[in-house]
Every structure is written in C-alpha cells, then in structure tokens.
Image 1 (spheres, rainbow over the protein chains, first blue to last red):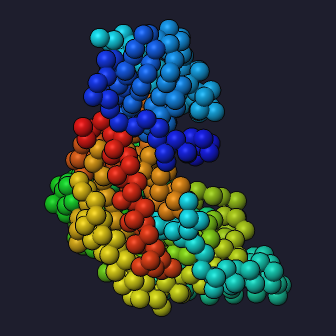
Image 2 (cartoon, helix red, strand yellow):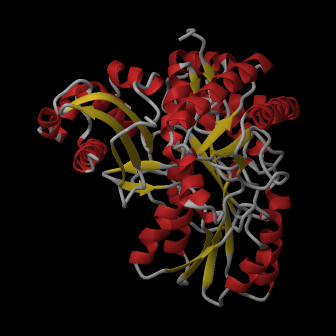
Image 3 (cartoon, rainbow over the protein chains, first blue to last red):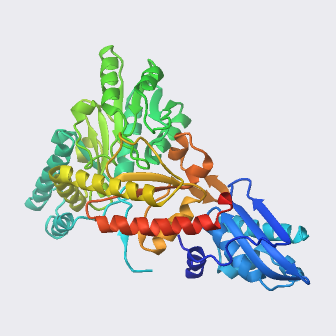
Length: 119
Length: 390
C-alpha cells in the first residue's frame, strides 16, 4: 500500500471530524456500488465557509479525502469551494491510485450537495 | 508511533526460524550439487533431499516416496487438482465455498474446460456439512477438494469424515479421490494422512517458519497425476525441474521442528489467542467473532468490528506497528468483501469490518496486550468518524 506520510497522518489524525449542530448546509452521500459514505456539515456565513465537520465510512482513501477536503474548504468563499474539482483534491492528498479516485469523487459530490442544500 | 512492532499475521506467512535459516544457509554454500548428478556433490544433495523428504513425510504420517516437492502451496494445489483431473475419466468436482484462490481458481479454469463444479456451503460456523458432501456426490465425480483449515477464519473441516465417505464410495467401484489443502493446518495440527483418508494433501513451508518458495504435495501411492511441469525426471516424473535443495532442506528442518514442538506451539498460540479475544470482548463493544468457536485452529482469530471498515483499521494498526490482515478489498469503487466471510451469511458491513489476527510461536502476552490497546484506540477513533454510529 503505497500511501504517503500525509495520507497516513490524516488517517491517524482526522481533521475536523464530527458534526456541527448549528450547520446550515448538510449533505450525506453514499457510493451506491461500494457503500462508502461521507457526511459534511458546514456553517456558512456571508458566503464564506466558517466551519466544517465530516464523518466517513469506507476505505482509507474515503476517510482521508474527507479530512483533506475539510482543510481545503475551511474559510473559503462558497464560489471558491464550488470550483474545487476531484483533481484538486487528489493533488492536495499528494496523489491517489486511479482505482481509488472514486473516493475523491464522493468527497467532491458531497461538497457540491452540501452547498446546494444551503438553508 | 512507539517504534514497537508486533507481527500478528502468521497465517499470511511466518518469520523464518533461525535454526531453519542456519540449516538453509549451510546448504546454500555446502550442498550446491545437482541432485541428479551421479558424482559425490550430486549425491550429497540427493541424500540431503531424502532426509528432508522423510521429515516432511513424518509431519503428516506419510511415506517418504509419497512427497512431491513444489515451489509452494499454489503449485501443489494446481498439480493436485489439474494433475488428477487431467489423468482421470470424469467431469465433476466437489469443493467448498471457502477455498483458497489457488484451489477455487483452478476449479474455475476446469469449468471452462467442461468440468462441473459443486461448491459446498459452509453455513454460519464456516464448516462444511458431511451430508452436503454425500448429497453432492455423482457417479462422474472424480475429485473432492476441501481445505483442512480455512486461511481466513481458521475453521477445521471434517476431512476424515469426508475421507470415510470417499473410501465407502470407492468400495462400490467408483474412481474418486480426496484432496485437501492443508497449508494452514500442516505444522499446526497433528495430521495423519491415513486417519484423514485423503489421497492428496498440500503443504507450504513458509507457514511453518521456513522461507517462501518451497512446498509439497502428498500423493498417496497409486494415485495417478498428470505432471504440470514436464521436461525432467525429478520428483518421480511429477514435477520436472532441478530441485530447490536449500529450500527443501529448510522445509525438512522446519517440519522436524514443527513435529517436535507442535504441542507446545499450539498451546502457546491458543493461550495468546484466548487472551486476545477475551481482552477484545472486554474493551471493545459491537464485535462479532467469525467462524466456529471450537472447531478451529488455535492461532487464529477473525473479528468483525461494526460501523468501520477493515482496511482503515488495518492501516491504523500498521501505523502503530501492529501487522494484521483483512480479506476485504475496495477497488475501483467496487466493494469486494471477503468471499469467506460472506459465505458465513453475514451482511456487507460485517464482512467489510473483518480483520484476521494470527499468532505465532514468538509472540508474547505483552504483544497481545499492546495490540489490544492499539486496536481499542483505533476502533474508537474510526467509530467517532463513522456516520453509521450516529
């Protein structure tokens, strides 16, 4: 398993794990094929992501993509977050084997759902 | 990370015993002759192979000339199943749903060539039922291949009862043989091929503290096999190729030690395994122990941890130096839960959350305690992250 030290660090020390009771943007997405799940809760104020938490179930790339994503979007404008792509996330992790790119796809999809669900 | 390393993956492979390594190292330098050569160097190698063959045979109560050395368990399984089916007149094989890929894969290949395969279920306890075997028998069945002990959950299959059934069937005139993959069992259980009633039995040296690259197939006298490696007279025409003399010598030494230390090793492994399972049940909630509680190998524990996925847990353990295995894999967005755990009838979540812990002769109680402490922390961390627990 050629996982990078950054990858392992996020796996052992997930950033922003949990849920936000006061979230105004929430999404819970599931990969229907493999069953991986990701839940994002965001507090957005004045078009800016003030706070973010995530929960994840699945293979290590799914857990790590969730953690890295929260760092990427924290403090960002909604428009900036919407522009994030799967490739941006994969780059931020330092690369993922192509067979594991679905984990990044799930994370980006969950982010877009959460932003679309902004209350 | 503490820097401590604890190896709990002895079903994948075992560390080489220094006594075995020494015997092998001497052989590499001193016993370099080709065993087919008629001169003294060759005969020295031949004699060393013969001694090793006696030790490997003694491990399973076989005769020396019934042992065929191979490159490992996979080759031995291929030789047994393909070799027998190619030499036999028939078209039906009976196997189990939880075989190692080196057996199940060969069965799939034979299906492509027109053979029919019945795969016996194992039910919730992971054990084949003898009634199912009897029911699956057909007049054109030529081979039953069922593993002696499973590599993921350690359950021991009723091979001696299947062996009796095979003998009874053979007494009616049907040509029927029994193969058992004993890769996980050899060196861990006291085995006797006559008591088992098997005609073919597979062993692998690296599961009993010898190096990789060497295994053996027991072939009962009179059983005809079509050789898979041709182009040489070695191994009584059953496996052509210059013998791996150092590997064979290592296997012989490892088999001798396994036979001499079998009781002590299994008591040791059993005690560690029980200590481990008791601590896990005390310290971690929502766990499911997979496979029969009694009819199983002493050194192995397979546990599903609810709400989390095995590979993430495995890597968390590895980060703290604890090495274990999972049979499940997620690849290209496709879930591939362990076929063995799925065969127990459990749901995908439990199958994905299963880990195998397999203990060995050099593990200590302190290893177990450390592993459980690391495991409890990792499970808690991953469950805090899991949306399934919310």
